[in-house]
Image (tube, rainbow, N blue to C red; front, side, top):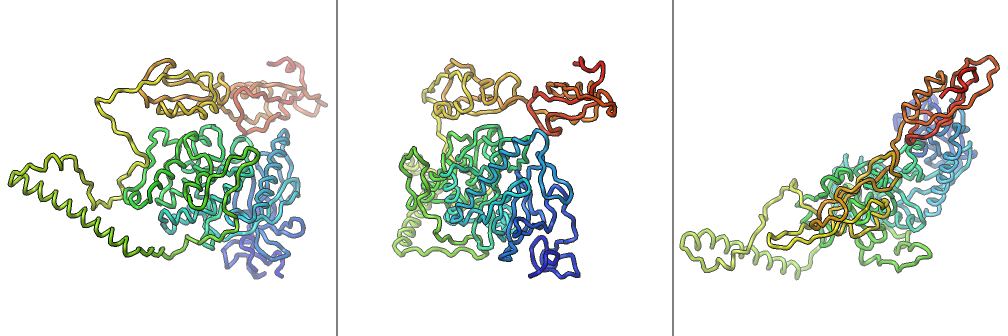
Length: 570
């Protein structure tokens, strides 16, 4: 067995002791891994060798690693929210910053629960295969199987490989089944994107990018990476996310595989909600496919397909059936997790399916009938009517229209939802504008009359006077009778504005007071007894972590070295 020093700390391949640069992956073992990350060569629980940091997530770091018992490559994930912790150079133990203990502890519990749940779902091949969850060094680790893969985003850039509808459905089925199983256990992903779905060396899709729920809600304490093309509107404007959010994100990735481009960001769709497909592609889709895709990608959650299980029933009606309502526990997916799935992401083009002779004969007959009809209409319009003035068929042919059959231009976009035609003499249906000023965001989402009667939109804005998720204003006054379909925009409070806390440690208290109050903070002061070795009136500590964002009006307490004349300062 090669010693630790004779392994590449990235790919874990044996390395010649005389060289530092790996001939397999090009990584230089001489590079130093600086704090706050674990030093290369550290061993967890006497078994798992820690290598190079390969990725940073919203709640920590991911290391290359090796199981020293089986000599298999592994992936080691460490709960390490950098805004909350301190770790010195070469140290292993994590120290929590002052006043961050509760947030760190809650996140640590969520991290262990997340990876223990994934460990119990090892029968789903689309999920990370978790070997162990370890509590060490004042934090927690998840050790998973290493997977040779690239992100779907990178795959699409390199290969420009677009999948037909049925192959997209089959390729995404393992991911959808895994998500449905997690949802049934009360767990959501909320970060599905082309960078968290991976194409493995086995040609199948794998779902990763799992982080603790706090990375989606506590913006001040955790790094929150997100892709606006795949995140639904409720995750971008302070709304209420849920399983319906995963429905949107996973079908946005599906849309990428189907069309070759990501859907427009949800924020852009609030201005012009016209999700489109290339005409050439739309003509190839089976009946109902556009409706399924559009229902899953509805901008507002109350109009969207509400669960991945419902989505599976729509995509695979012969394999999945809606589960009967069971209030005691959520229903599990119908298919078992050990079903074998076919690999779809490979360089060979799919083979064409055979068509029966009877179907070919019917198609040929219909084609001849359509072509003959068009030739007759052309002959009539160019010769019989214009030259010989035979208008006998005017009344029959007047309502007939034909679309050009030779248009292969995929740049023309076809809307994925039908638009109703209006008639000038059709009476206008009036609806009464309700008063929504006393409602909350949850009330608006549950009100089905609003999207039914209006072009209903929700916008978010910060407010110093209106509590979070309460309505600030509505664009049309309540009590008015307006035509059905009128645009109604309701502005909801996203809470007080967020302001960044300046670092005033070492400042004179009066200067620190002016800086903090000017930034919008409420300043409190406690005096420290001075033994004569400290400069009087200087700020020694702050009760909150500088550099983080807090709601405007948040109180921050400064500890100041005692001095006459400063005790009664403002």
